[in-house]
Amino acid sequence: MKEKIEGLRVRFASELGEAVSQESLEALRVGFLGKKGEIAELMKGLRDVADKKTAGQLINSFKNEVESAIADAEESLRKAAIDAQVRGAKKYNPTLASPRELGSYHPITLATREVEEIFISMGFTIENYDEIVDDYRCFEALNIPKHHPARDMQDTYYLDNGQLLKTHTSAAQNAIMKKYGAPLRAIFPGRCFRNESTDACHENTFFQMEGMMIDENISISNLIYFMKTMLSEVFKRDVKVRLRPGFFPFVEPGFELDINCAICGGEGCPSCKNSGWLELCPCGMIHPNVLSEGGINPDEYTGFAFGLGLTRLAMMKYGVKDIRDLNGANLNSLDQFTEDK
Ligand code: PHE
Image (cartoon, rainbow, N blue to C red; front, side, top):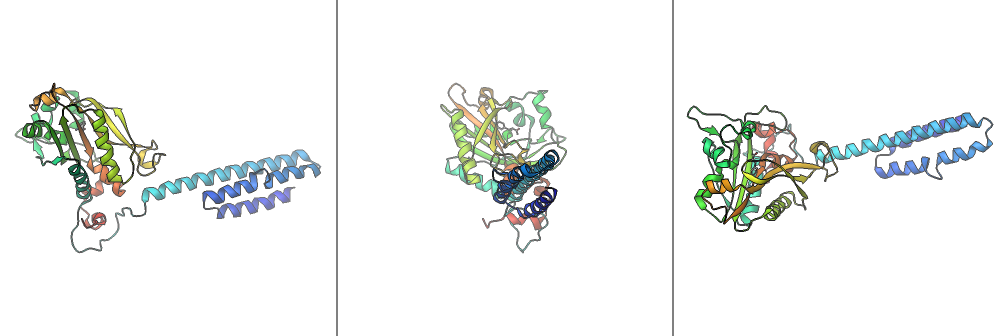
C-alpha cells in the first residue's frame, strides 16, 4: 500500500505541474478524488490489507494532500487570471520608449473628448471655466457657507488677493446658470486642485467633468439614464450602476454613483478592493438654494448635477495604476494612448 501511494504521489505531483488551466485541474481532481478515482481505488484495496488502520491513515493523509494542493493551484490560477486582466493585453507600460517623433494627446485629453462627444450627442453644450475663482463661486454659491465642515475636505491653494484654485468643477455651476438660465444642459470639464498628500490614487491636481441638466420635471431617473448611457459608451459595454447616499451641500438628495468594476466585471479584484464596485461619480438633484442663487426659480425647475472623476475614468479606461504617471509628463510613456484622434 505504501509503495502504491508513493507512486501515486509522484504521478500527482507531475500532473499537477502540467495542469495550467481550470479544465486540466478539474480533470486531475476527478482522476484522483472522483468516485472512480485513484483514491477510491486505494480505499477498495484496503480489503486485502492486513493492517487496515495504518493503511487507512496513509490513504487519508494522501487524500488531504491532494485536496489542498488542488485548492491552492485553483486559487493561484484565479489570481493569475485577474492579474492578467488588470495588466490587460493593450495596457499601459510606463517604461516603454516612444516610437514617435511627434507629440501626442494626453490620456486625459482623449478621455475628455470622448465623453464630450457623447454629451454633445445628447444635446449638452460644453463650457470652459476659470481655474482661479473666488470663495463665492467655489463654496458660498454652492450652499457651503464659511466655516461649514464640508470645506475641510476641499482645502486648496489661496492667493494673496483671497482668490483660490478651484477645488471642484462645481465652482462653475453658478456662473453657468446665470449665463443661460433654465432650461439648461451643459458639461464643463476642468482642472481642479486640492491640498492633498499624493499617493497612487491621490494628486493635488486632477480633472473632473461637471454636468448639469435643469428643466421642468427633471428627476433622479433622468440622472441615472444619462449616466448609464454615457458610461456604457465610454466602456463599450452595458455598465451596471448603483447609487449610494452621499452628502454634498449643493445637492439634495445626494449620491455616490458606483459602476461595476470594468477590470473584473464585478467579481472583485485588487483594483476595486475586492468589492466589485468603483466609486466614479458623485451626483444628485441640485439643491433649491443653489438654483435660487443662480437665478433659477426652484419651484418651477429642478435639475441634476454630477461631478465625474475624469482622471479616474482615464485611469480605468487605460489601465493606469498610478495617478502620478498622468501628471509626470513622461512623454515616452504618455503617448501610448494616442489613437490618432
Ligand atoms: N463637486 C463634488 C466634489 O468634487 C462632486 C459633486 C458634483 C457632487 C456634483 C454632487 C454633484 O466632491
